[in-house]
Amino acid sequence: MIRIFSVLAISLGFGAFLAWPLFDWPVRPGWIGAAVLLLAASAVRWHWDARRLSAGDEPGARERASWHSMAAFGLLSGHLTAALLQGVDLHLGQGNTLALDNWTLLAAAILGWVIVRPPRMERDERDQEMAARGAHVGHATLTILLIALSLTLGFAPPPVLERLSPFVLGNLLLVLIMLGGLAKQATQLVGYWAAARPGDDADG
Image 1 (tube, helix red, strand yellow):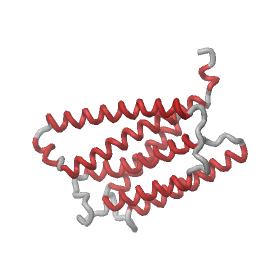
Image 2 (spheres, one colour):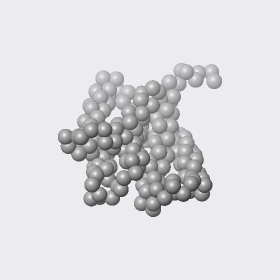
Image 3 (tube, rainbow, N blue to C red):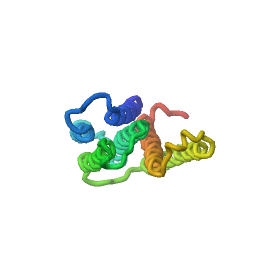
Image 4 (tube, helix red, strand yellow):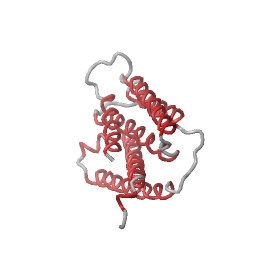
């Protein structure tokens, strides 16, 4: 389970790190993030293939999808959240590369799934239960976040509301959707982790 939350924390932190202007990057941060994401996807695919050949215990297709989705959502939401916190204009052509970098990371996430995706997206007996668990937690998380946003829009002081333009709100809603997706995928992975240890739950 530590590995699940480590990947979650690293993806969120790395995304935020790429967006924060701590120093001048030699190339656009989006390209650096994309390269790291694709290299990580290649390394994970190699590791899973090696496990399949040596022990036959590699993750199933739906579990692979959860791992990749969690890492991708973490990277994208961390990057977009850090960009929004800076209060800069995220439209293309406004003197920063944050919007273009986010699109670059999205493209890399899609290519990363092409790399890690198994030849056949087969289901096993655990997938339906894990999907139900993940959907429940993801829906609850998104509901809580939307309630918090609604309260902010209703009761925040004017200086805060002035910063929440329609464009910013649109991007903020994207972040909330991705955070809901993060909760869903993390819950599914915890479920797969627990299901792989049936002896821990023996005799109730």
